[in-house]
Amino acid sequence: MKYHPIDSALFVKNRSNFMAQMKANSLAVFNSNDIYPISADSTMPFQQHRDIYYLSGVDQEESILVMFPDCPNKKHREILFLKETNDHIAIWEGEKLTKKRAFEVSGIKTVYWLQDLNKVMAELMAQSDTVHINTNEHYRASIETETREDRFTKWLLNKYPAHKVEKSNPILQRLRSIKDPIELDLLQKACNITEKGMRRVLKFVKPGVAEYEIEAEFIHEFLKNRSKGFAYTPIIASGNNANVLHYIENNQVCNDGDLILLDVGAEYANYSSDMTRTIPVNGRYSKRQKEVYNAVNRVKINATNMLIPGTIWADYHVEVGKLMTSELLGLGLIDKADVQNEDPNWPAYKKYFMHGTSHHMGLDTHDYGLLWEPMETNMVFTVEPGIYIPEEGFGIRLEDDVVIQEKGAPLNLMKNIPIAIEEIEDIMNS
Image (cartoon, rainbow, N blue to C red):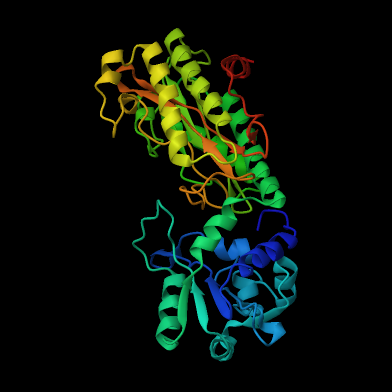
């Protein structure tokens, strides 16, 4: 892995928190992701399942974590099953985790090779009444591929049909949404790498560069700073491309007078950052571009200040809608009649700002978190309002990642990434 070792105390604490919420005499199982095929002998780069990583720190394929806090055999209360390494694997792929190294990473003392799984699981299942299975219940999930976790769950429930079944996901949704100080440090590192990429790009952009060249500048800086790359597919959208919310082709030339919407974030140690800035190709914003930019920034600042303990996500978005309505009226994009006659299910402001303002951030770019429960201290959210005006040939979105504080305004993890018009222009023209 490119990232520096993480203190195993994080994973020890995460498991302890999870096991405290398990049913009596139950066990929970978590699997690594598959390495997904492309075709022939080609595969996609491995991405670890965030749940087993959160609970163990293991960043390797074909790994299984079992937790059984009430197990009569104390050595079986936490178990890792790993792919056994050998000389052949070490030569062709690099050495996998040894039992000693797995303990150093995870804090788990009992480590078996995968060939012992059936025998050990038979013993554990005989001693337990309930099994916690891990299902993906994220509100944005769209799943068409059967995962390794899915296959294991099918096998387990078929082989042991008399067990009661509980879900792990609701526990993880709550635990993962509130960040440990170690996690906040990792998120800050991801944001700092994004900042370095952004500053590099500000000095690179000029009329005639291609969107993909800007993408290349970001990835160069990310890899140089121990990131394995983008936390999500980057959006480098010049001109009217910014009005396509998920524009990812990144293949057009950036023209003099246009703006470029940059929705880009580095990952670090599997933790995501998520930044958006909108910059002028020629280094200077026009008067109209400044008006819209400042309107978006005002919404962002005011929306950020609403992110405090106790806030309800849905209510927050209603209030942000009011802020945006006021700004759009001031810009002349909507009028009072539009507001008076609006459909409550699709308010007038939605014509120019059609997406949400905030989502949870963490191990996933759209991280775990139960949206109907009040916000809590140390949750991390994006704040990303935008105004999109196809008829004027540009769209502007601004986005930072912030940590909810016990008191006062959230902590902005991206406070050092240029956002003020004057600072952006100064850097681009220096």
